[in-house]
Amino acid sequence: MIGQADPYQEIPMSKKVYLQTFGCQMNVYDSERLTSLLLLEGHKITNNPKDADVIVLNTCSVREKAEKRALGRLSEFYRYKQKNPQVMLVVIGCMAQRMGEELVKQMPYLNLVLGPDQIFQLPIYLENNKGYSQVAVCPSREDFDSHKIWEQEILPERKTPYTSFIAISRGCDNFCSYCVVPYVRGPERHRPTDQIIREIQFLTESGCKEVTLIGQNVNSYKFKGKDFADLLEMANDQTTIDWIRFMTSHPKDLPGKLIDKIATLPKICKHIHLPLQAGSDKILEKMNRNYTAGDYLKLVERMKERIGDVSLSTDVIAGFPTETKEDFKKTLDIMKKVKFDSAFMFRYSIRVGTKAASLIDDVPEEEKLERLHVLIKLQKEISKKKNQKLLGKTFQVLVDDKSKRDKNRWKGKTKTNKTVIIEGDRNLLGKIVSVKINGADSFTLFGNLGGVNFDEKICRLQL
Ligand code: SAH
Ligand code: SF4
Ligand code: F3S
Image (cartoon, rainbow, N blue to C red):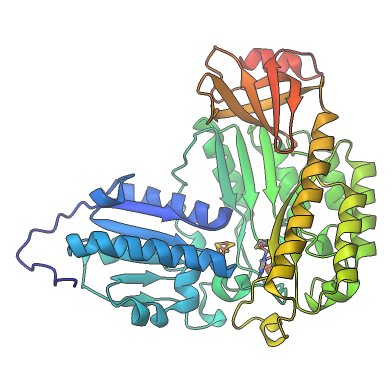
């Protein structure tokens, strides 16, 4: 049984915090900014939960599996707390927002539950540690912070100094029928354009080579008359960053003006993450995606024509309610036609409170799994063939780490978002180098330094 904290034991003002993150880039970014804030407040970060005064779990609710993982991890942390009752156990992020009070009913030993818009209050709670079961989440969508969330200009504390996420918006208004994000992240709110530009330049001056502009639907960005295409142009023209990535793009909001900017602005990476979700018009309508398979294919054609060598990735869901074998075949057909460079594939997971939750979840779990395996197998073959076509070609690669498998090799990414493992004994960290591809599988390219491309002069100068 868990004991009460000893009131006479001295509680240090500066805490050792262990922070683990589940979920998407937005959660990673939130955790990175929270880390910065904690460090600014004089706390320390530890990589070992057993060594921590405060254990924080930033959670995701997008699928049941994500929540199960978080709950499993929390029961592990509970064991540490049983050994040391002074440890503060904190749940933040999307599952915290979705479950709120319910979470502390299930786990009364939790000290604190903070929704995504409350996470920056953590240092205040650390200072006034009041014990157990404090919950601060937004009671409804109307209560999400309308703009204050941007007031604190906190730069993310990143794993690598060469790359960074920058959120340009938060929340989502699209209400895809399967998705919990609009409920747990609140309404779409856009960040002031000048703040984004300032942040990109600041990061650049502190050594960052590449930024990824993130939002649930970056294409719908608007702020005082500026849209996403304008923002890309400003970021390209008014900052000295090398590369600019962005995600996620919704197919319903990709006008010709934006495609033209992606095609022509030199710093913009020619990679578009464009979730398809399904290939059947019946399913797309039930998902409330606001496009048909035909619209999607036309859009892809336009992008392929206009943006030479564009790289496309996607998200696909297998086994949405009422999806028949014929509907599913339409998803496979469109994947064969588009030939995505890569894809994230999921089986449908019912989310309480969403519109799709009122539909009968009529595709049996084994069938969902079977469809998922078919999807993965197909995409693996497509990715491999596409990657093997790149053998002998030369790409610019931003090196951000050592290879995990072989510490004598380097790892980086092309502008088209392909992971490349590079031979080389020189220190390449943080450099943009020319790499000639000599090997490829479904997920990775392999290569050597060298090769000639039109940007080589610039690359050599940076070496
Ligand atoms: N805003 C982004 C990311 C949303 S979450 C977008 O619109 O793409 C990432 C992916 O999770 C989604 O694209 C979708 O494919 C998947 N997803 C969301 N809800 C799901 C659910 N209930 N079951 C299975 N997959 C889901
Ligand atoms: Fe979810 Fe759709 Fe919003 Fe993406 S666009 S976060 S899938 S509701
Ligand atoms: Fe998950 Fe929240 Fe992102 S639900 S996918 S962490 S916005």
